[in-house]
Image 1 (cartoon, rainbow, N blue to C red):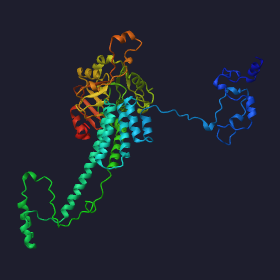
Image 2 (cartoon, rainbow, N blue to C red; image 1 turned 30 degrees about the vertical axis):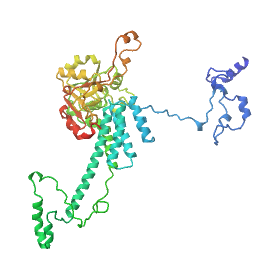
Image 3 (cartoon, helix red, strand yellow; image 1 turned 90 degrees about the horizontal axis):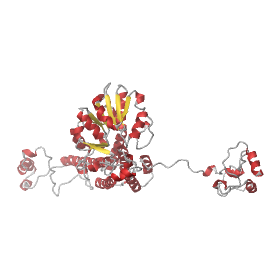
Image 4 (cartoon, rainbow, N blue to C red; image 1 turned 120 degrees about the horizontal axis):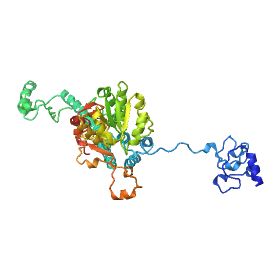
Length: 511
C-alpha cells in the first residue's frame, strides 16, 4: 500500500486510467516495465523498421507518467485512419476503376439485390458507368458482338432488380447507340460504293448480244434503246433506289482487293462512337435537374400555393429556381413512414450527405432560406387542404409508356384529390426515367418495405392477428396527370409515346 501511495504522489495531476501497476491482467498493461526498459537500453525492437528516429522505448516518458498505461506504436507502422466506404454508389464507382469487369458486374448485381443502390438516379448512373466499362473492355468493333455483350449484361442487371426500370432504360439506350452507329457506317459504305459504280463504264445487259457484233458507232447508238427495252420503268419505282448493274467478266473494275473502293477509309471505330454516346448519357444524368428547373418560371407564379410530396431533388431544385424571382407558399406532405425523416431534414436544411437521400449539397440553400413559406403537414390532411392549393408538383420513380407513373407511396392519394378539386397535377421527371414498358400487371411494379415501420414488432398480439403491408411505391394512372415536365420541355401524357419512339428502338424493347 505504501508503494502505491508513493506512486500516486509522484503522478501529481496526471489523468488516471483506473489501473494499478499490479493489475497485469488487463491487456493494456502487458508492456515492458521501467526496469525492463532500462535493461533493453539501445536494443532495437524487432518489429520496428529501421529508421533514424530513436526507438519509442528509449524516449523519456512525461513527468509523472506511468509506463504501463501507454500504448507504444511506431509512427511508421500506424494503421490507416480512413474507414472503408459504405456499400453504395460512391464505393461502386470507386471500385469500378480497379476491379475486373466481371467482378464489377457481380458487384452491381449484389448491390441491386440488397437494395444498397435503390433510387432512380443512382441506379441509372451505376448502370451507365458499368456499360461504359463493358464497352471499353471489348476488344472488337463488331456491332453484333457489342450488342450481344450489352444484352447479356443487361439481362443480368434487370433480373437482379426488375422494379428498377431505369436500369433497362439505360441498357436500351446503349443498344440504340450501337445500332445507330452500325447503320451510319453501313450507309456510308453504301453511298461510297454507289458513287464508285456511277464512275465506272456501263456495259449492256443480256439481250443486247446482237449489238456487240456491230461496230463502235452502232453500239453507242443502240445502247439507250436496248436498256430502255430491257428495263421498263414503272411509275411506282421512280423514287426507289436503282439496282447496281452487274459487270461482265471482262469488264475492268476499280475496286481494291479488299472489296473497297480506292480512297475509301476503313470502318470507323464504332466502339469509340458508342463510348462518346454513353458519356453524353452520363452528362445528361448530371444536368437533368438543372434543365428541368429552367422551366420553373413558366409554371410557378407569384402568391401561389404549391403542394408537393417526398424529398425529391428534382422537385426541390424546381421550386428553388422559381423562388429566386417569385414568392409563393409550399405545402409539403411528410410521406410517413418511409420518407418522412428525409422530408423533415429537407425542409429544415439539416439533411445529411449521402448517396441515397437528399443532401444539402443537392441545392444551394434550404427552402426557408430562400424566403419560401413552407407548411409541413401529415399525409392525412392532404384532401382537406387541396381546395386551397393552386398546383400540385410531384416527383416520380419511373414513367411508363402509357403515361402512368410509379412514385412514392401516397402519390396516388394526392393525385386523386387534385383530380376531384380540379387542381393541375404536374410531374417533373427526366427522360431517363421514361420506360417503353407497358404496365400489364400493375401489382408487379409495387415494391414493399419493412412492415415494422407501420406497426412495431413489440405489438406482438396485434401483429399476429393482421397482415401488415408497407408499400414503398404507388401506381398513378395517366388520367390523373395533367402535364409532364422533362428536360426536353412540357408534354401531355398522351405525347409520351413520341419521346419513347425517339429514344428507344423497337427491337430493344424486349431484349
